[in-house]
Image (cartoon, rainbow, N blue to C red; front, side, top):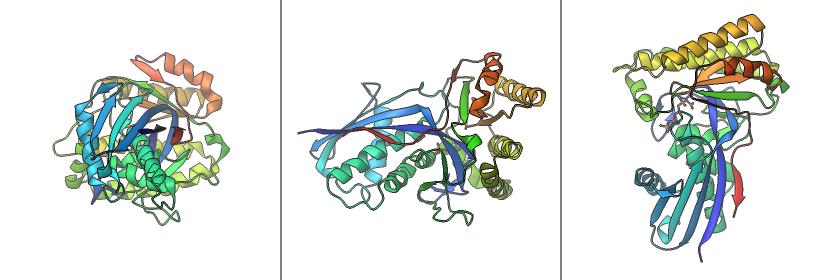
Length: 335
Ligand code: DP6
C-alpha cells in the first residue's frame, strides 16, 4: 500500500551570500542566512514498492521540466538514498509564493523534498545519526542555498574557523547568543518584477570561476562574516546594515564584472534602494535592504518598526509584497 510523507520548508534570505562553488556543490565561501516563515514549499512524496519510477506534479499538474531535474537529483544521490530503485514515487509540490517571483524557490523546494526523502529512509529503517543534518546535506546537493532552509532563524553554511562544527557539506543553526532585536526580524520582499530571471543562479555561480575580482570578493565576504557574527550578538544594527547592504551590492557587482557581464537589477530596484536609504537617514529607523540573484528588494528591519516601515513600502511602485519574518525551518505535516 502506498504511503505518503509531507513536509513544508521555507525559503531563506542570505545576509552573507553564497556565490561561486567548486567540487560537488561545495561553496567557495561561508554564507549566513535568515530562515523565513511565510515563503515556503509544501511537498508530499507518495511511495510504494516498484522499480524507481518518479512522477512530479507542480500545483497538481505534471511538470516535465522540474521532473527531469528531480530525477537527475535523485539518481545522482543513490548513496544517500539507497532504496530508490525499489520503490515508485509520486512527488507533488506547491509554493505559497508565485513561482519565479525571484525569491529562492529552489531553496524551499529542495529542502522540502529532501525532508520527505530522508523521512522515508528513516521509515525504511536505515540508520541516520542526525536527521536534520542529513536533510541539510541532501538539500545542498539539490541547490546549495537549500541546505540552510532546514534550520530555524540564523543559519551558517560553509567551513570557517570562527564557528565550531561548521561544514561545507551541510548547514548548522547558529542561534546561541543572537541579540533579541533579531527575534521575528522582518524580511518584506518587494516584488519589482515577476518574470523569469535572465541568467540562472547556476550560470552565475560558474561565471565566478573566471571573475578577475573573485579573490577580493571572497576576502571581503570572510571579513563581512566575522563582523556580522559580532553584530548579531551585540545587536549593533549600524554594523549589521553596513555589512548586509555591502554583501548585496557586492553580489550584483560580481555579475556586472563577469565575462560576459549581466545586470539583474532594474531601475525600480535602484529607486527602492535609494528610498530605503533616504528613509533611514530621515527617520533613524534601522531599515536596510538585501538582494537575491534578481531585481526584487528584501527589506530587513526589527519587528517593532513594522507600522512605520509599511508606510515606506506603500510608497513604492511595485508588483506585490510578501511580508515575511524569521521562522523555524523544515516541518513535517503528515506521515
Ligand atoms: C544569490 O542556491 O540558488 O541567492 O546551488 O546552483 O542551486 P545553486 O544556487 P542557489 O544560489 C543562491 C545564490 C544567492 C545567495 C545565497 O542564497 O546565498
